[in-house]
Amino acid sequence: MRYTIDHTDEYFPEANLFAILVTNMNCLLAHKAAQTTIRDLVSHVNESQGQSITGQISDSPLSDPYTFWDPKCADELHLHCTLQYQAYLTDHNVPQPQAVEFSLEPYSGPGPTPNGVTRLSGRGAPLEEVYTSYVCYLIGGAFERTRDQIEAKFGATPSSWPVELQFFRHLRNASFHGNEFDIRPFRGAPQIDPANPPAWNGYVLPSDSAVNGTKAVNELLRIPHTLLFFRDMGGIVA
Image 1 (cartoon, one colour):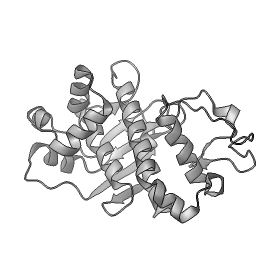
Image 2 (cartoon, rainbow, N blue to C red):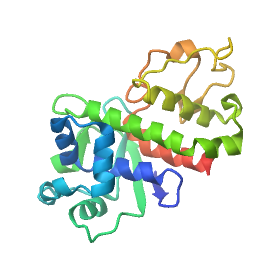
Image 3 (cartoon, rainbow, N blue to C red):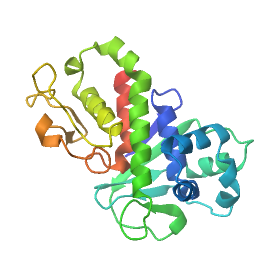
Image 4 (cartoon, rainbow, N blue to C red):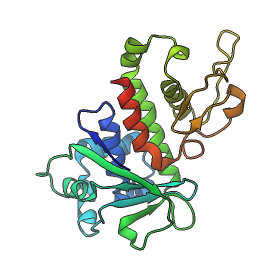
């Protein structure tokens, strides 16, 4: 199924950054070599529009759609805005794309063209840690950016929020604390109600003890589902 995250959508900024980095392998490789922080990487792409890598990208044409696949995920992410992002990163006269278009297709394994496929894990895929940290940064930042808006709409008590936003909150907490769930009792009671657990798109946090110690991103939430997550959360928060 094909989806669009428009520039007016709540989490378009995060979706846009994710799309830029997924389609820009050279930027990720440069980041890994320099051992810079994820915050530095995001700032570099967001503010300077990737100046230091434009020469490399122009020599590496990308296919459209661009496929991002993870052997542990049932879905492949297909980005349909690849050529727009390449133009944006290589020419400062080209405006930033105003929508992220993507689809999720059944996993079919590696594609035939190196410039058109990113493999998350396995031999020949050295960037898994970088992608994981990057998605943690985006999810945590997205929640913090809209926390006041969420509380204004649904109240200050997270247990009264829709289960999808409860899932978002716990994902945020883990993302900002080593990417690991550590859900502790609040006022002597478990935070998760097993009768109404935080959940989104088939992902469920059944109880505090059941998820504690689990990695949030790339163990629970699979990275190909990142854009769908931002799309759905934006629809709830707006």
